[in-house]
Image (tube, rainbow, N blue to C red; front, side, top):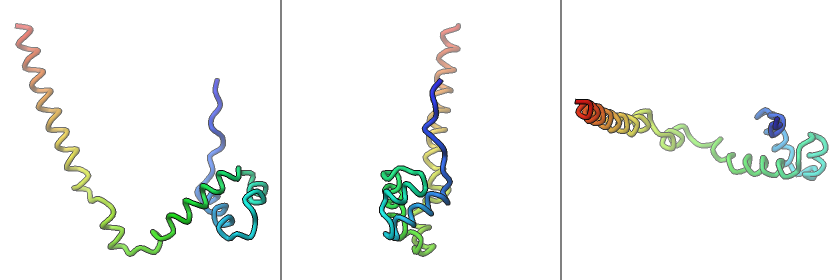
Length: 100
């Protein structure tokens, strides 16, 4: 039996570690030892934090422009459903013709 990839860490924990790294008061090795996390993981979380900080200060209008509406998401799905229904009807018709 194979083991999992390790323990799951909460977003709060990751944020706390990333903030500690972003402060710059301690080295990644010191933070890794304190929180028992690999230094590479700490640098990845720090990079994610710093890359996503500007989004915290975006206006709701800018966020809304970036997020697709329900209609924009649903339209291609309905198109696909229509195509699949046409194909299914065609195949049903052909299979019934073969049985005759």
